[in-house]
Amino acid sequence: MQYRALYFTVLGGLIFLVAASLGNGIADRPLDYSDWTYRAFRGVCHQLPERSFHIDGVPMAVNARCFGIFSGLLAGWLLIPAASARLFRQGWPGILLGCAVAVNVMDFSAGNLWVWNSSNFSRFFFGAFLGVGVVCMLADRFIKTTNKTD
Image 1 (cartoon, rainbow, N blue to C red):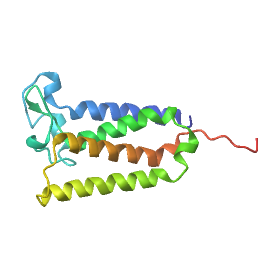
Image 2: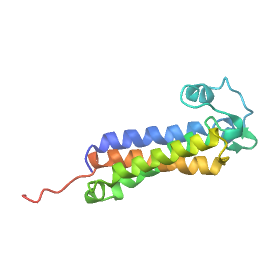
Image 3: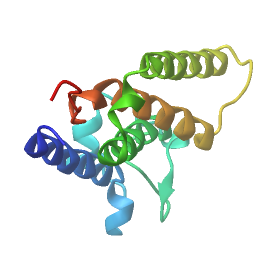
């Protein structure tokens, strides 16, 4: 693997991001929007309690879609060392990311237009799909390629 130190630094950051997004419920503390976990995500997530998973009755620090994106980034990142270089060079990562973005835009738009009501599980799943798609676009930078002329 190329850039091993960077890979593990990003991995640690993603683990921290997912853990922090769990909010106060994981620490068995009451909801407190002034807590650092809720303040940290305020600029990137609308944090609506009805669109968030709850842990022991306390909403997570991020909504279900953001938690899905963060979880998808982490899951995809963990799979990089096991993937082969050829897997990321066939052009499909761009198609995957495009599909993930399209599905999320359609789900978001349809929910706002009252065509259907998305559940927190569907928001999480589509967000995770987007997170994995982003990692697939970046993964080839970390896979060591073999040079056939050696």
